[in-house]
Length: 153
Image (tube, rainbow, N blue to C red; front, top):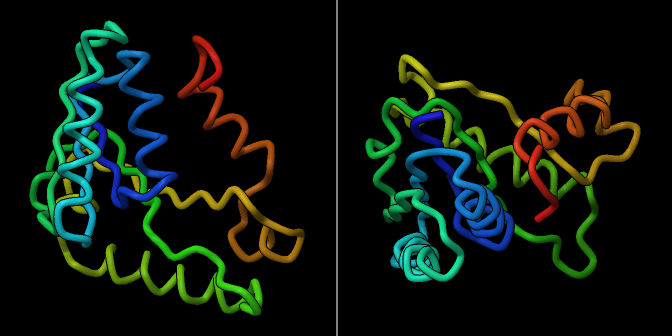
């Protein structure tokens, strides 16, 4: 695979980037986040670990520059907020769905690129949510197994 983009440089996005870089799964990883400097910092951390971990993946980070995701083979959207005390799961899902919708409505190459693949995966689903997203646990596991066929992260 040539290029993979991750939208969201929080714990999930950064962990995903680290796992894929460690495996040399892709030639280039682009991380984009709305928080100034976060994606650049995560990318720098990964690049500085490359010699120690012995990977050649190019990792780049950008603040809100979604054009850098053009021609990605896969786009992973991990952006969203964490659940706050007293927050109902339905409110969290609605908020995060709004964030994903906002990202996808930007009309950027991340979704419109010739190689872009859009698929939303929510890993913490209850049975009602699975129906809403129409994504089974088996589908999630199949996707994760494709990405992690060498070892566990």
